[in-house]
Image (cartoon, rainbow, N blue to C red; front, side):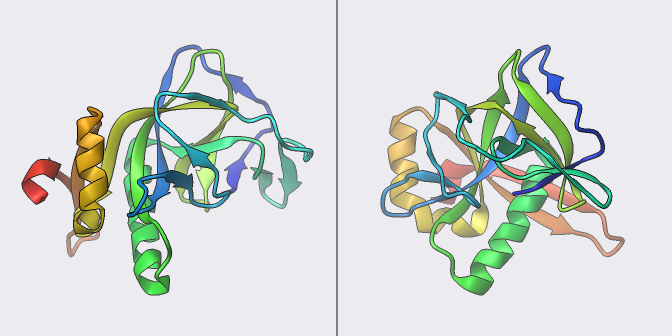
Length: 183
């Protein structure tokens, strides 16, 4: 995933920053993997990116891009919009792993960038991230993860189903429902 930034000046989080990360989940194992780097992650752990021989950013024609060496995540609304695009791509290409959104934290004192993914989605690239025990899944995928969801409930993980409605004027509304009523 590439983050477009206007300036190569890195920021330092003064407080914890809530963000959201899109993963793919194996229906068989329940393992979380990042979509683009296929990095396996788990909840309640602090992850710090150290492996990268490339510069943290590189110049491009309209700013700079951060593409490796950092954890990429989204601001709330854009996480759901991006996840819906991934869902459509999933259906079109029959990818392995079900798209799911995890609530995350960029910890205080972490170095990070803020910018846009794909020139559209408000996003972060941070040196550290913590995956919380709170997930969002699009309603159409709930049946694909029934066993995983049951196991996660036993581990006190909050899971919420969501759906998006697009109105004729182009505005969208994201609605949420209890996952227990969807199973």
